[in-house]
Image (cartoon, rainbow, N blue to C red; front, side):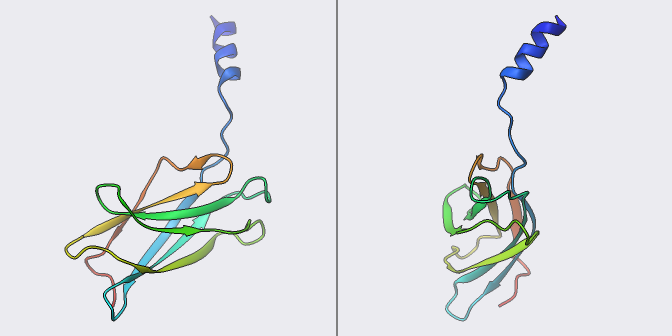
Length: 120
């Protein structure tokens, strides 16, 4: 039994830590679009493994914006990046943010950002 369990565990792929969204802020501009700022932590190791983007989703999961991250942030953890010009439909009370890793793909977790009290 223990040997079988060991083989099962060894056969499972080893996943590195997913990018962790620590914080997010939203501000509405005068044209009604939004700027979303996201702070991410991820154990980037270099070009072979780094947090390479995040997306803004509506409550139903439709993408409203994508922020690619063009390079590793090995010595800059955590780090904050923004995305401007995000069109969020009127009446939307919150958005969800999901981060992506170059090695493991999209994180299974989402960060909820409430817009009710957002500035702008």
